[in-house]
Length: 270
Image (cartoon, rainbow, N blue to C red; front, side, top):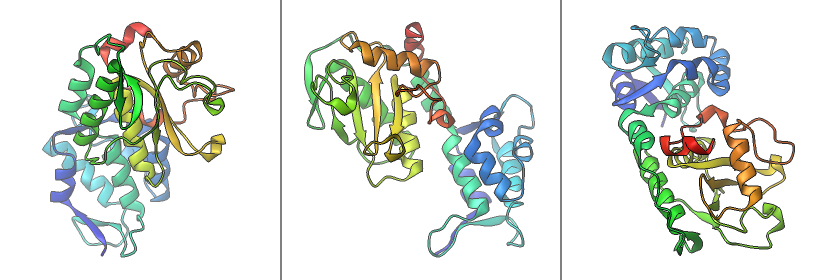
């Protein structure tokens, strides 16, 4: 069955949320989707009626809906087809889906920013069957909270924890504390983006890795500020704050489109 988005369902998607205009203008995936649909990100940005840098509230979201609706050529008025009967996203639907990912829950964003620093507790515990310290466990629970607020209902599936020596593929970063790998097998790009974003919100330096990096698909993350992390992991945190990948060659951050929404307590580690 085709997925149809009308004014009401569009407004429901963005209820209590906001879309940063700067992200609209600079997100590469959104720009590609809008261009392919025959529009421009500038048209979407005009929905910021009061010019405060955010699109939120009834009037601005109504304007944003109109801009997305115009991307569907020849469709019914006041609604657009987001995906066809086979589940394939159509042009307006691709733009809508990307905007929904970029939108930030206003309450969740404030909560992530203002969360207190995790406890400096390095007792080793189990999380999803893997060894981590208590500090990392608390951060993972926060990440799952943020995921729930993004509408992601699955649990974080760890494939590797911390204090795991002798794993050459990890370049030793898992030898100490604060390092985790999250399994992303079978997940969509949108789900992976949500996972990366939630981990970053909780205070992890996190990146998705895949076969283009010569690796099994997963998310690699380091708990910022962990006192038991090894030197290689600390270098990856530095790379994260610098907007880089943390891999050999230190290319630009492949997940920069989701932003780096780390909490206030993590700023002192920059």
